[in-house]
Length: 102
Image 1 (spheres, helix red, strand yellow):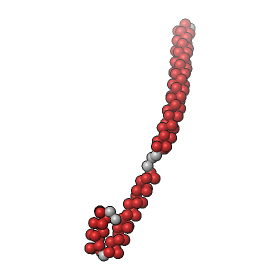
Image 2 (image 1 turned 45 degrees about the vertical axis):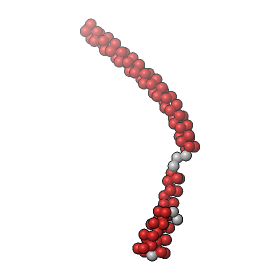
Image 3 (image 1 turned 180 degrees about the vertical axis):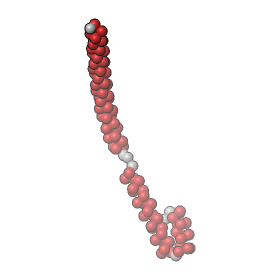
């Protein structure tokens, strides 16, 4: 046992007895080991970080393509709407002129 464990063991031994103190120390050690194992399992490795970077790079490229496609679609829509508005205005002016000419 390490120094800290011995001190804890002695404190528990004086309060609980030798056998109970050993059980408490073993329980605490097992809990700490399980916690450490859980933390180790949830850590990201260099491979995980590398894979994530690769996925993000691919995702960035795909995102840039989607944005470019969206821009071209938006420009096309703006031009079509502008043309339709122009034709509507020309049609309205022609209709007004025909109405006034009669």
